[in-house]
Image (cartoon, rainbow, N blue to C red; front, top):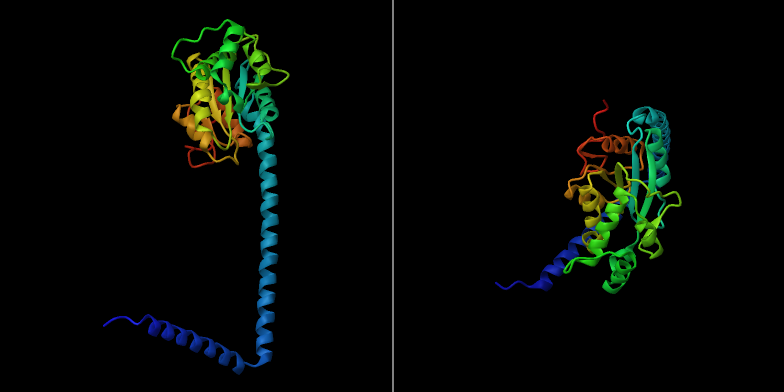
Length: 287
């Protein structure tokens, strides 16, 4: 037998009207005084719950402050002497408008006996470099790019090697060209022992393929220790990229545990450290 949609619609409407009528009749039969008492009880219960939540939140804030103060006090002891005499360069691939982790990492390295010798910020313009611009840079520096080679990738590899090995003013030259940024204290007169790369929260796949990966490959090929990091609030995309390159990683380098993990990773501990799902554990073994 064919289904009459109108019949079903009228039936459903009748059911809802009956429910609504039942609710209205129920309220009409309740003493108004009881309703007021019920409303007041609900209000008191809600206020009690809000007070408890505020007290618990304040307690958690106090515990967090105590833990952070404890971690801060222990940090110098945990890293002391672990990078004695080591020269480290910092490579930043993130939004230039963000707060730079360089000042914090400089202090951590100093506490460990190391020295931050250079801070290099990669600009997105590097990934948009045209062939004719690259040719002009090569000509100005006397660089010969092999035929058939991607010119951005070749230049990225070249600058990566110079950051690692030192003895070149190519980084200053590329700063003048607006491809990278350098801190005022950057020193490329000597080679470094290690490089820390801090990625951003989002990655441009073309930039990664054409610029960042060949640069990191060149640093790694130079034999320098290379550790990939990102900040705790970032998405994890940068760390996943570094892990694909088989680098040791730290996914919360802006935290005290992350800074301890970074120093230990620079000192030779392999693994993926931090608080995100991609991490194997929070810290390397403290030996």
